[in-house]
Image 1 (cartoon, rainbow, N blue to C red):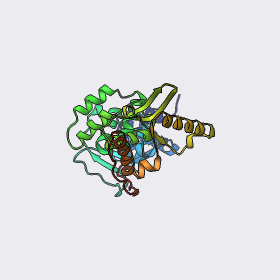
Image 2 (image 1 turned 120 degrees about the vertical axis):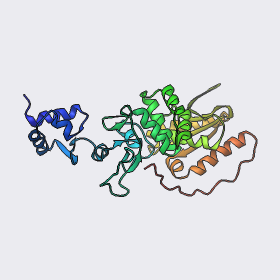
Image 3 (image 1 turned 60 degrees about the horizontal axis):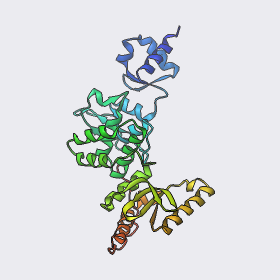
Image 4 (image 1 turned 90 degrees about the horizontal axis):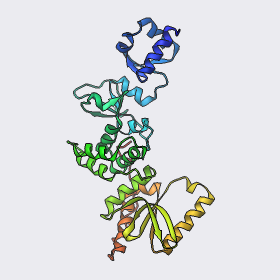
Length: 309
């Protein structure tokens, strides 16, 4: 039979790893709760609010302030890919509630009235996480999260589109924009960000993971504008995985060019820190294909960090 301390831990596990003193005291005595704290298996996140010691920092932070983990922090909790790792917790606090004890700049705080169906275990639901991220973040970051949710199969395109259509208030237009663009075909957050920039740059249809078929040619490109024969490749820091992969990619790029495709290649640094230049390069390629003279390239001024972090 488990001892009193272990029983408290088991109860806290069944509640998702976080609970108030009232939740625990309804089942266990105060002495058992104190014993569990002394064992180090549970900790006081704040006065009257407890968490398992293994509960990660951002969710414990939200619980300590009677808040809910949200946005990109919730996306990471679900294991989704994000373009930029959040360096501070994103939380939702009930409207009209004064937040005390949070140092300035320690978190991203948003105020909203959440329904019980909007959160679970101290984290916004998957759908709410996608919608909030689309409302709060730059399009590159928001699309990376929306694509990740669709790629995981935990949010369906139909549900996302319907929820976005019903969105109201500040940022609702961007929620609908991101929902329209979201695709489960994007391979990773960097490709999602590149697609967001392509949409900024041109009205041409940009397809993720486009399969190119031609007489003697088969290739899959990260992004493609098929009717203009423009291939857009996103190069991460993994350097193609190794010498064999690098050589194979070089062959693929050469064959695409030989078959009349423009191939644009963008790095992580290009996309994150030179988005205006990436937009220019895409727009210039489209202009060339359409027989127009492209504008002069912008200076590659390093973009600053956004509030997405």
